[in-house]
Amino acid sequence: QVQLVESGGGLVQPGGSLRLSCAASGTIFSINVMGWYRQAPGKQRELVAQITTGGPTNYADSVRGRFTISRDNAKNTVYLQMNSLKPEDTAVYYCYCNARPLDSAPAYAYWGQGTQVTVSS
Image 1 (tube, helix red, strand yellow):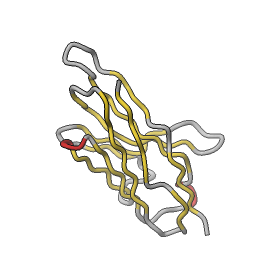
Image 2: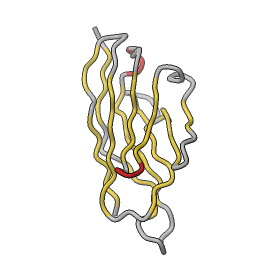
Image 3: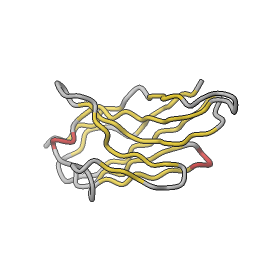
């Protein structure tokens, strides 16, 4: 079983910055993709950014150029640096990974519990 623990959310003024962190722990053979989704009230969960083991990244159009995703494979940790935050970035941010708990097991999707990001003056 893989557990994801997020940290770094909070309240920030428009134009400000936050850095989210997410550490994976438990029985882990390998992790392919790690990323962040978000869900605002009354909206569907959407992809924010993701990064593969080798480094290629993918961003939602709404955050490209403002957010940066990075990863420390040795620590099984993914980060999301969020700059120039806007009120529309307000949401619960969920960490995600696609991981194999064992060499003999297929890959599964795992989710964190979510961390609130609020952008408001």
